[in-house]
Length: 511
Image 1: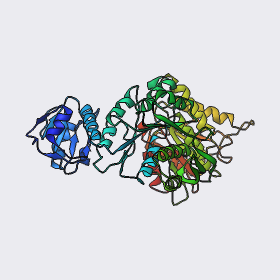
Image 2: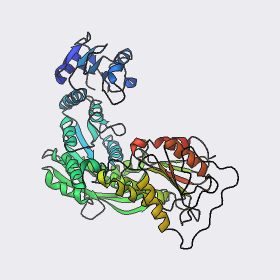
Image 3: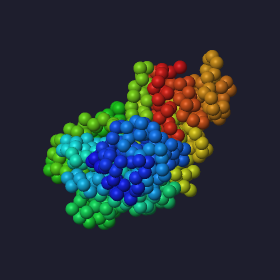
Image 4: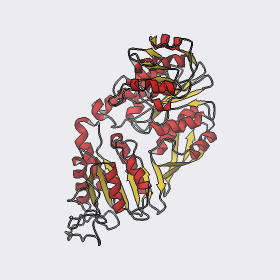
């Protein structure tokens, strides 16, 4: 951050110095909310959460090198006391942005693909000047200002990811760091239960383009009607990306290879260039186009944009991470988060990547879908149950609609002739703790006598649908199923922590 004395921080945040704080002491950064991330010169912001109260770690932060603590009550440390730590953090970040007259702020929002697009765009802007971008998905009322506060006088670009949990959230984030370029990717069904409908989601996402100045640029997805319609909500110039002819930045001749990586011709008003993505899944094309459109508006040559997009690999963890184990099992870890749209994209990519192999998936019931939740989760189950899998693990609570949908899809793909009872595997059964004991068989690890369902998926093997309580049990079930050369997709809502499943599966060979 730009160095500031405590007296100035107190003035910006309307705070009061406490605990023998020296008003001349200078904070040089970083600003952190995790005491374990404190470095000499830091400002530690004490946030009271549901399980942990940062105020309890104030003394530890000072011992680790923090200059002071931004707190809402007196602590045993030099502090700036404010009424609301999150609001004070936002004010501090906004003040820092106002001192950076040479910085260009680019905001990225959408229901899916924000982080991947942000990562691609930050790679492009880094070709022009020093760039600050969020680590992972720092995109809310805490992560956003913390990212902004990483900037210094050398920073030329801020590529910021903006998330909305309700109407007005993006508007507040744009107040902290007013963007000159706003990128809107799509309007999907993430947080549908919170917003109540896609039109409300579009209203929230459109707050980004509403914040743009007349001299700014709105970069909109021409292929999404709700995003395209946002052109009427801004005074900024509008440029479109997409696959259709109406998009000025578009992909032509998209081809997907056997590993699910897309290649295409990037067409722009000033020429074209070939792009071969290293990112997995055809849905990465739209993210790349959005980044390319913003980069093009910044004056980057088309050849440079294509080169950077072709060399880019995933920067943020647990998003379509593809790893091949030593025994040839391919693990697709897309476990960071999930919504109906990203689930469809992940299964589409997995169908290509796992072609000709036994394929398995671990999923969990989606959340924050409101009254549409049961129907959308049943649809998820039908998607997974009809995806040609050899086995499906549904982890965690509220799984009934997912299981029902998966069973229905499996039945629909079954041969018409009734199947006889399945024979259990030779040797003792291996069932992970908490795995379902009936209904849908896991032949390589089911209890004797468990019924089987013989459908078409899995190269003639029985479809296996199992419900387990948690991420660890899901990994144990996979260990019983997987054989060399198989492929597995792991994807679920953030709260389920299915990255733990991937970690365990990658930690050792099959049993």
